Length: 130
Image 1 (cartoon, one colour):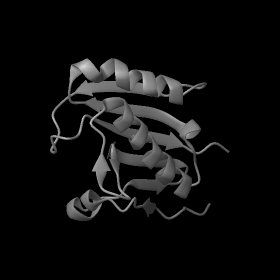
Image 2 (cartoon, one colour; image 1 turned 180 degrees about the vertical axis):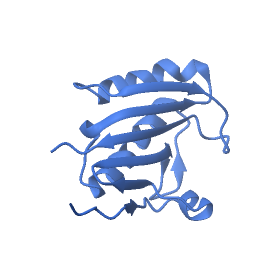
Image 3 (tube, helix red, strand yellow; image 1 turned 135 degrees about the vertical axis):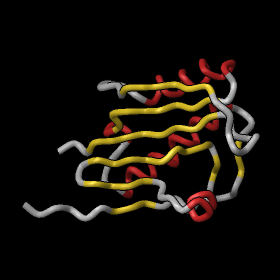
């Protein structure tokens, strides 16, 4: 049995370079996507709205998964980090619109972020379907 080499994916985020991490790591059939905030890495902007930050995070995650040969449908676990408890329902609605059957597991944590503009960050694990 040949063991597949571990691969990495970059989104071009300045944070990846600065902190020395990859947007995603592919290890066999598993894909681990780093915490992804709502920054648009093409123009460096971030929305003031938690729901739009969630949508942008999902777009970035979808791009990383595509580079890894997977899609949002392959996600089996989502970790959601939210700065303000008042934004939980906004973020949850976007996730509910995005994920269908089978729905991934989910853990939501209220916490602070390194950058004040950040309202939400998503971390996912995916398993490529055969």
